[in-house]
Length: 435
Image 1 (cartoon, rainbow, N blue to C red):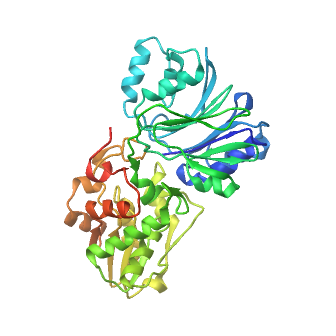
Image 2 (cartoon, one colour):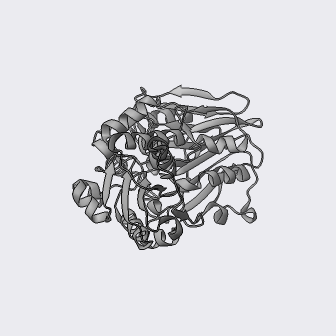
Image 3 (tube, rainbow, N blue to C red):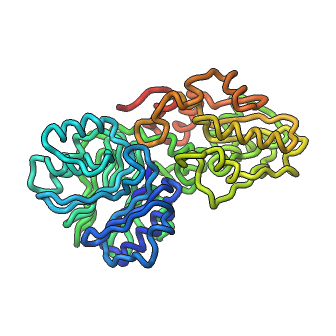
C-alpha cells in the first residue's frame, strides 16, 4: 500500500508532487521518490520532508512521485523506477501487488529478460516493452490488459502521462484539473488540498492519457468488475477522503453505529484508539449515548504502527499516552478499526489497565481479519493473523480485555451497501478474493 502522484503541464512539478505526497504520507513512510522532466530523479529512505528537499529541486512541468510502504521487493528499492525501451523512456510508480508476479517474472526471464530490481512494478515495464505494438500508448494498454491485479499506477513517458487502475479497482486513483494541466493522486483529498477542479475518480479497467493541448483521453482496456478494497475505508485512507462519492469518516461512523446495534456493549466512557478508531468510536457513542473521551493521546510525530516494519510494540508505547485522570476508576470501552496481529491491542489494553480502570472492553468496528491480503496490504502470511489462529474466547484472553466484540461480516457488508458503496473486496474478512 503506497501513495502515488503524477503531474502534467503544471509549473514547478517537483514542488507540486512534494505537496501531493505530503498529503499522502499516511500511505507510506519508508521512502519517497520523484521523477521529473528529462527523467531526473530524487529518491531516498524516510519521509517526504526529509527526502524531497528544496536543495534537491528539479525544474520541470511534468513528473510522477511515490511514497512507499513495502509489501514486495527489497526495502532499499525506491520508486518510481525508470527504463529505456525501443518505445521511449518510461517511469512507473505503483500502488498494489501484482498477485502472480513470480510467475510473470519467470516467464520474462525465460524469454531472456533481465530485471534490475526485485519489485513487482518492474513487470509492468517489461510487458510494455514486449507488447506487439510500436505505439507506446497501445503497448501500455496491452500490458495493463494482461496484468490482472492489483495496481493503481502512474506512468511517465516521453510523450504522455498515464494513470490506470486494474479491472477490479482494488486500489484508488483520482485526477483533477490544476492551472493549465492535471494532477493525479491516490486520494481525492490530496487534489482538494491543492485546489484542483473537476476531480474525477478513475474507473476500474481504464487508463487515462494526459498529453499536450488535449483534454484527458479515457481508454477502457478491461471489463469493469468492481472489488474496491474495503480496508481503505476501515483503516488506510484519510477520513476526509472519498471513494465512490462516499466519505471515509461517515462510513467509519456507520460501522461504529452498527457495532453498537449488534452488541449493545455498555461502559462509562467510549475511548477511541487514535487515529483511525476515532470515527467508529464517535458512531458508537452517538448510537449508544455513552460519552466519548480522549483516554489515549496520540503523538503525531511517530509513524503509524501498522505500517512500520519493525519494533511495533516499542512504537505504540511512544506513540500513545494514557490519560489517567480520564480513565481511572471507570469501565472503559476501547474502539478500534481492526486487529491484525494483536500485539498492538494487547499492549494498549495493558496501558489502559495500568491507569487503574475497573474494566476494559474492546470493540472492533470490522470483522476479524482471517485472511491475508495479496493486493498491497502487509498481511501476507496467514500465520501472522491472530484471528485466523484463535477463536473469540482465545482472542479475548490474549488481548487481556474483559470483553471483546467484533462487527459481523454480514453487518459490515450491510453498512457499505447502505452507504452506497458496492463491489467491495472483503477477502481478508471472508476469504472471498476477486482473483
